[in-house]
Amino acid sequence: MGKTLAEKILASHTNDGKADAGEIVEARVDLLMVHEVLGSRIIPILDEMGFKKVWNPNRVLVVNDHWAPASDINSAEIHRRNRNFVREHGITNFCDVDCGISHQVLPEMGLVVPGAIIVGSDSHSTTYGAFNAFSTGLAATDSALILSTGESWFRVPETLKIVVNGELSNRVMSKDLILKIISELGPDGANYQSMEFHGSTIDTMSVGERMTMCNMTVEAGAKCSPMPINQDVRFWMEDYAPKKKWKEVTIDTEAEFIDERHYDLTEDPLEPIVAPPDLPTNGKPVAEVAGVPIDQAFLGSCTNGRIGDLIIAAEILKGRKIHEGIRLIITPASKATYMEASERGIIKILMGAGGIVTNSTCGACVGGHLGVLGAGEVCISSTNRNFRGRMGHPDSRVYLASPATVAASALKGVITDPRSV
Image (cartoon, rainbow, N blue to C red):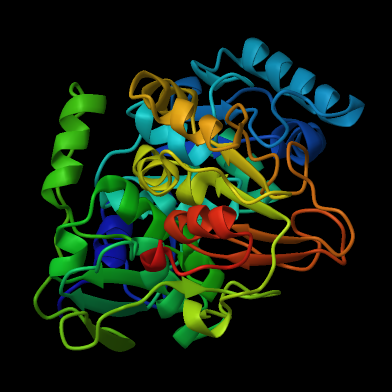
């Protein structure tokens, strides 16, 4: 019987080399990423366990990204505990408040390789599936056990195969595609499944576009979302991890799937999608929500704060001014992204249009700082979640969309089809 990507990657990390869908396996973890949850929840669990040392200080990444720099005394104390932990245990991979968002800086540091098992203390750790890896988010207790042992148990997920062929139209982005897919699945439609992507559309996507897709699979309940390798991933590995050894994982022809979904963008072209409050799976064609007035437009996050996202916003806003009374907040996903955007003149264009550019942080996305919403305010956002109160006041409202739609909406002051500007 053939194997899926998830089964093959997990099997390669077990002692007996076996991992069939539905089985419980114990597998070796290649890398653990922890952010502020280390200082807030994991360290107390480690203390209760009688923890002595990290299993491998070279296979852990600690990131201070959610409140960066610290927004209050509580976050400052969490960051202090993280720094102390890094020093005490000799952890070699540490990103303090000047680095950026974990899901962007981890690949930029060359810590993601195809075929790896990567666990993060954050639900959007599914992002690294873009690199042909098995990546998933686990809670504080599981993360504490990995810190101590380097291993974790997994129930091998069944796999949902998604095949997408054809080209995305002008100003239609991978964010629109994943919003459409998860909206058809619903919030539990891929619960504890591996969402495996195939087809010519996926093959030709940039690394950033692939990361956006994998990032949001968890909103349909997915456990992981490994993709086959494409040429852009190969180039990325040459640039960012030239000394790392890795081997491409391919799917077996006889692999078994719990379900298959097919999309032909030639026969049925995709249009921009917007997800109204309060679920990411509420996606609708932009025409159905166009004209809704907004107070804030947010471009950034681990979902859509990469260089390609900033470029398309700059293309739309170049030589123009955002609508009077609208706040456009731009948060690049990492310091490296920010610097590249600055060198290419993108930051100047975005600020010239009236945008506010912040340092790289999860701040506005999680309602932490640098863009918190007040009562009754409406935001169109390129982030991944629009739950009630996610970005601020419980009575604020968040619409999820692509960077192109966010930029166009900031320009007009209402939710706008980016193809119309």
